[in-house]
Length: 440
Image (cartoon, rainbow, N blue to C red; front, side, top):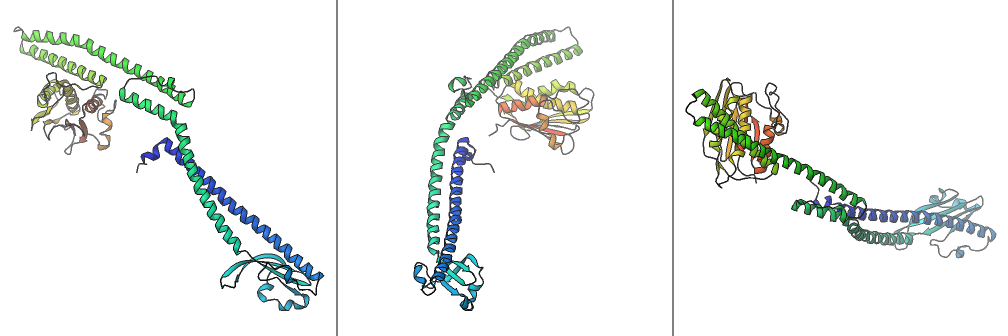
């Protein structure tokens, strides 16, 4: 499951991190405060009780005939002291404590509830003394302190969140500005310098790096676009000369049928080169082009011409080529683009099939053309890889090519929102599907 968009934003991460840090730090301080308070208070009470019970014994030793209970009226139950001759009268549950210690016990109070007490014990050869201290009120104070600390933790967590919001806005302001300018640049497509709008800091360095990268990419794109335009322009002249010359020669009545057939092949090759030049020019400009007259292109007619042009790939191989038109397919695109897309698929089928059949079906489904062959076939896991630039099938060692044809087809499909794929043919070979319906 993908994380929420809010969680992916850098500013949101800063706010959440700062709020969690403030909450964790405050909570840790509250826990440490409670622990240190309990530890120190325990130590002070124990020391004080130990001192009091010893002073009580010393007072009794110095004043054996006086009642000593009134000296410690705040303790309930009052302290008990036993002389040497009365050790046997000490309750059994008090005899078990060490000579000098402070222990935590529970005793029933007057209201019947059990309350926590600390029992201070002092023992020597002549006296045993026991002093109880009710620290139930201390437990109540601890609960009040815990509630107060909890409220403080919540208050500081809210303050941390508010401070995080304010700091994130201040810290992220240059980054947000940079992102907004890059977003505007992406929408308009007009490169503008970013560095002048930012200070000489990390964000400024990032903007400078973007400017440098943008200049280099723009230079590369302009250079490649100019090169493709220049090549396309320069190739049109010799191709036009070849086409014109073959047309004049074909109009002559002094050539025999064999030469006429060769001239037709030259004419078709010149037309194919012209169409390929136009298609590559569209790709270099990343722009679509509809037929000049605004009408649609008949795919069946283009497929018939492509088969005629690429038939030379078959040579003397025993291959049966069939064009089946099940329903008409009309596409709003130049015939040159459709010719290049179909030409690469049909040409590959002719090239890699050694014997058997190649079946081109127009309108197998609405707006779909399929090219089936009985060649070596492909693996399902390799089908997508074959559309990558420079990748060729495992059974193409004996054939010539650079592995660019299918890469050109996939680029044309992306430009015109078509779809193309390759798959193994159930009866052997491969099937290429070109879907001219616009992708959603």
